[in-house]
Length: 73
Image 1: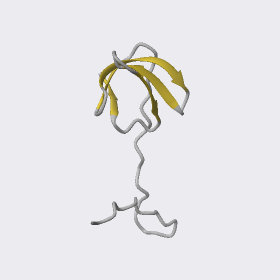
Image 2: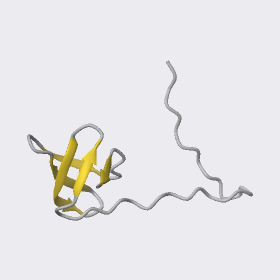
Image 3: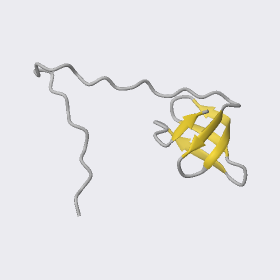
């Protein structure tokens, strides 16, 4: 079994450009979202930069930043 690889660290003395990180997704109350595990839902609350609360119908979940498995529709 292999361990998942960690992201490579950028060295300041490297002759190559630093990798550009994508900007974090921004959500607003009322946005429709889709989540890889929970499915379709609607944002019902926001903790700025920390988490969003989403109503997925049968359950409400608190999704933590960086929202890798969630996207806005």
